[in-house]
Length: 133
Image (tube, rainbow, N blue to C red; front, top):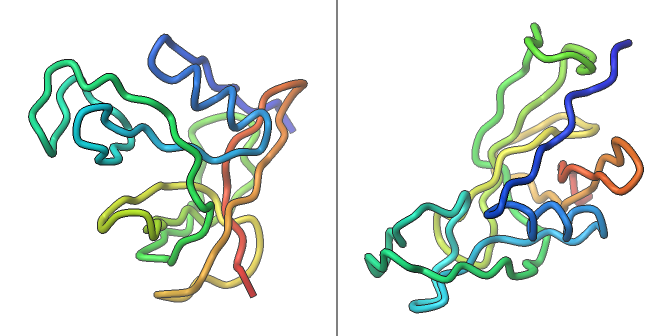
């Protein structure tokens, strides 16, 4: 199987990927109002700051499944199909949601999940999810 495409961090996302390489899940938080934003944008959607001074803050790494899709055809190399892509809501803030692969198990609406990390290469890890129970 071909190797997966690796993330290419930019100035904004480097702190996120650095934390992920240490198996720590972080989310950008506005330095003015404290609202989480993922992905971070140039303007904070909560307070309207055009200079939000985002800081990637560790979060619990737990959540509940809001939705999912079974991917049966991959357009990127290195993904064995089928796989399940899940939409997870984190408890830190209403509607704070992340997308990632479910590594094992059958998804169900409202199921508790916890973060897991896929180590893709030396020093590169991608957050994914596993059922909590």
